[in-house]
Image (tube, each protein chain N blue to C red):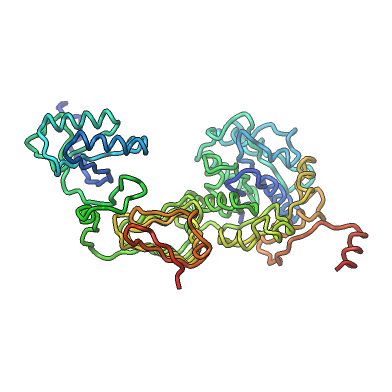
Length: 271
Length: 244
């Protein structure tokens, strides 16, 4: 049975696209058939993060409007052949999306893939509401910071009222993914801590992704974090989150980047 | 072929009755002075009446047809569109004057200063008193109230089992009880009930209001911030105290 998931947040720049790519790649590496869909029409990014920007011919808008067939627009990843990308259009805007068109595309994707992961644009307007409209589950990406948390709360309200499932009286399963978490800064009170965020949003936690230079490095190389260096702290955190998404019971930890031998030695002596 | 009626005889025209919320302006004599007061007030709240339906209650002043027409023209000049009249003498009305409305019910009294002066006369209080209530009703919300959501329940108390998020609001005709953390706005007694109260288990509220009297988060001191609190109205002053 296939699952359609939206990665959303309300606020921009919190890590939706990074998360979409990382989780998609992690699930695909585990043998699942995965497609990641870019809903950010006009400001597409997912193709860059996936390293597929030079292979885009047709896009989501072409498929929604019926000028291209779905298989023509899907781009298969060169590293993992169970991972595909449906890119957004950069030249159009969100008004080019129609509800019927999106419904049809999601339906077709459901038939082809185990996981359909939709990368929502920021905001609460048409692009964001259509990205969440037909999903089964939602991942709400939040930074440990008040404005991000309040925007996430707003999005959760929309997920509970504006999605097809919600309108039918069914529940959408929702998960919180905290990104850019810095344990040291949270301990100093410069960031909201995990308990604060979960207290405000009152939803289950899917994972905690530590703040790391690796995220930007991977993004610039056009590689999902989980593929670029699978042993890095954010990659391990995303891999754990992907396993939780599949229903595995993985203890919640905040991975840290490996330190050099001398650091370890020094750290151990100092402790 | 009979072509007199374009309406299919089998399809009767359907009517329904619907009620709307409107502001009621009740001018007092002398009208000139009342208009000056109105101008003073709208200067502080420009655009307040823009696009809002307003009903003119003429039960206090007795005006003839020219008087009514003049008043309507004066209000139109100020951008206040009158959709109907109340308390006017039906014989004074013609087709150029908005229709007479009946069976309206008094609701929330819009206080004219925003910050609600505490010196409301006894006569005002009588108007503001809640109408003899029907069945007691209440609303129970078992889920968290999310940012951007408004819960509007004019008929009684609202109880929220979860938290009320920053950027959301609860508006209740009666009292408000929040068993989670209150981070948004809570407005109790919104239909003009000074006896309404607000209770919450943890006060992080942006604004508390009862019967139009309000206080914002800026005024919370350590004793009531993040504490279980209780808020009530005392002689036109909103009190907030820790809940013992």
